[in-house]
Length: 177
Image (cartoon, rainbow, N blue to C red; front, top):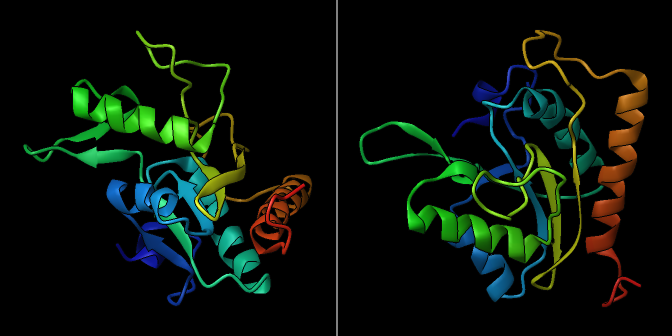
């Protein structure tokens, strides 16, 4: 994926985003890796708005990469599906593993399950194979709006939350206490 083509406001062709597969995402936990993961994709209005800001902040904070796991997928017939509402057992198990490994909680649950619905976009901080923090960057409530700008207040809120996640993974404190 070429992020500067998928995200309208991301003009930086040398951006920090790197798409990862489900297996690569799970490997971060298994191999005790450290990094920030964006759960979401270009289909999400909030991700469209926030990705350019995340790119700028990541570079200012010295992050080389933000991994991106898209919750939507393309099936064998070329149709797009959403892992959060997947009907196959494999997709439900993958979703359950993501919810369990990240510890994401939500007021909303996936239909016919007790699993939390992971909102898009959600940023997850993983340090040494464990989730140490996450937040959802949902600033646009009306998905039909074409406004792809954050208010000053929302920009400051996002910057503070994102900076906190980066500080968590860069901290020398092994236990993040």
